[in-house]
Amino acid sequence: MEHAPTWLINSFIYLSAAVIAVPLSKALGLGSIIGYLAAGIAIGPWGLGLVTNVEDILHFAEFGVVLMLFLVGLELEPKRLWNLRRSIFGWGSLQVLGCALVLALAAVACGVDWRLAVVAALGLALSSTAIALQVMGERNLLPTRSGQAAFSILLFQDVAAIPILALLPLLGVVSMANEASAPMEYAQTAIKIIAVIAGIVLGGRLLIRPLLRWIARSKTPEIFTAAALLLVVGISALMLLVGLSMALGAFLAGVLLAESEYRRELETDIEPFKGLLLGLFFIAVGMSIDFGVLLQSPGLMALVVLGFLSIKGAVIYALARHIELPFQERPVFTLLLAQGGEFAFVVFQAAASAKVFPAETASLLIGAVAVSMLLSPLILVAVDRLLLPRYANCDVPAMEEISEQQEAPIVIAGFGRYGQIVGRLLTAEGIATTVLDHDAEMIEVARNIGYRVFYGDATRLDLLRTAGAATAKVLVVAVDDVEQSLEIVDLAQAHFPQLQIVARARDVTHWNQLRDRGVVRVERELFESSLRSARSVLELLGHEPHAARQTAMRFRQHNLELFEKLHPHYKDSSKLIAVIKQGRQQLEEQMAQERAEQAQRRPHGWDT
Image 1 (cartoon, one colour):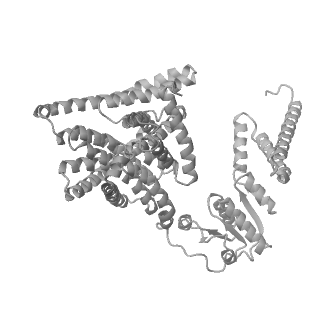
Image 2: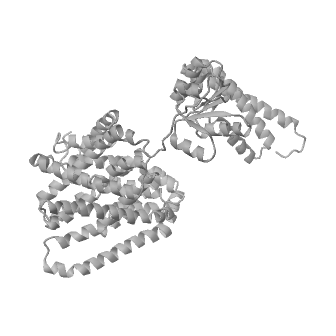
Image 3: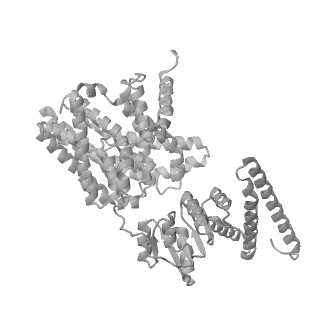
């Protein structure tokens, strides 16, 4: 491969490292980010040395973060972003200024020069947008209160990067001429920033949407994809031109297009590029960890990393309490914001150029940030396994298990969306029920609106006895979890043979497992509602309501009969497919014949 171009060799190395490391990391329960970081360490200068131009790769891979924030912006309409203004500027400023102040005071107390302490504290106060958003996306945390708070703070950090960089020349060794011209330069820069942001807002409203509409009319998917990438690249270049964050510009563009009719298409086109480039970014971060500095001063590096993580963690946890985040969400919120961020690399390199501190100090701080980004996903795994189980019920009202013997003829296990409808109908008919559920929050809500629900796990024989299963007539198994549902059925059949069981099936597999146990009255949770939707579609197409109902009922009967035929063969895939095909053909032929008979019975002149 000595004649192969460099880009081809590097692409092979990156993809090979990712394909090996990421699945292995996920199999070990460590998550994808640790896999990417480990791959970067393995192929970087301090690993196998397969890649050496780390800085160039890091700059290129940063575009993954840009694309990610563009996609996040597409999910936020301008009105919703405006509603977040208090959390962005309020909580964001509290986090950045609070962490920077405490870190700077701690550094000065340790004898560090005040200028170095201020710059180091401001850089370390920033967090990794890439890691935080990736983790929140994987865990579906963005819609939660802690996710919204973390996102608002990360967005403020992108804005705060501008004054932080502007502050560096004032703290460095600058000439008097530069100092004299500084106010004019800052004024010019401010005008540029305002002009570029105004241009993006107006362009997004007046030009970008018509342009996308014109490109979409060409019906050339690859050109629309190219246009989407061109949009993000162009706006990022504009932001760089005036010294702003590329990610902030991409986010702003995404928000402006959040109400566009092409929003979903833009998301679909950009998502694959975002995933690959974001993975490359994490690989580049792994490669950028300078183990030379770590080995030269391991004690100092450990002190810096543990010191700033502890201080930031304490400040951010206090902030989480101040904004009244749910107790069980605070550990992950704190950890995601306590780590260092990729923008700290830029701050410390710029500080070294401005002679605020020597290059060796910049290397130490950059190494500390990189190590914190490596440690955070690992600590998150430990938090998941050791700490969060203890937090799980901290905010949940204390519940006493069912203790008094019940005698209602109906026992309902599970009072979620399915069990509630069953229970409400029976209650309206004046039929007494005993309802068991082990979700304390849901029980509290149900009790507040007047329903009598007992706290208890229906998979426990003693609690089923107390609920009156020994004398009841019917057991309704309405729990969400498939394994728990089957366990309850097994328990009831073994100890309460008089009980007739009515069960909810989550899917076809669950239905077959219940039928294996002899449960006859099984209802698939979405079947009836799907039939009603199909009836509505037929009516909208011009079918008479009665005819639409008859069609749906015929389909229902056929489907139920087909399931009974399929049940003996559901473990034999080839036989199963054959029976399904045969059943579908029979249904289509039957309905076609009925349509033909109806057409013959219509009076002459009937307008179809």
